Amino acid sequence: MDALYPRLLVRDFDTAVAFYTGVLRDLVGVEPVKVVPQASYANWDINGEAGLVLFSRKAIAAVVGTADLPDGPVTRDTAMLVLRVDDVDRAVECFTRHGAVLVAKPQDRPEWGPGLRTAHLRDPEDNLVELQSY
Image (cartoon, rainbow, N blue to C red; front, top):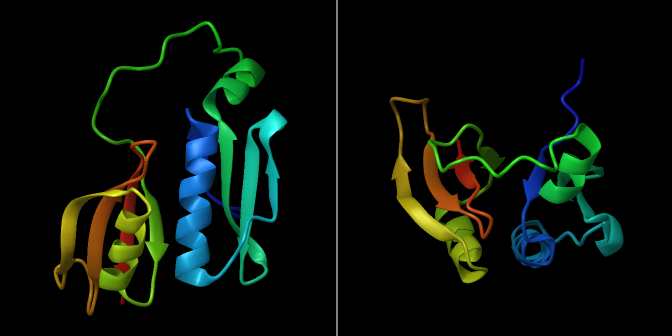
């Protein structure tokens, strides 16, 4: 089995595409491979492999039969997008410049692993994002 790529299910497709286009352009120099607004689908490749996909929550709800259900209540996070970067502090600057909110400042985390440095942010969809270097 292969884990193919992260797919974030988003409420505001246009805002999410603008955010990740800016971040991924500035951070790793990539542009979207495909943005299909009518399908609420966008994807980016990084180093020739699938890196990130965005898809509308409303569109997937129609596919899986949950369109009539309300959005769930706010709870503790159940998933997190983890990105390995060369420089956590520089990546935080990039993410916040594009509208992310810093929730845990960059810090060394030797208790998690040798040489590990992390920061945690929220993207415009309120997804938790961990930036890490090691």
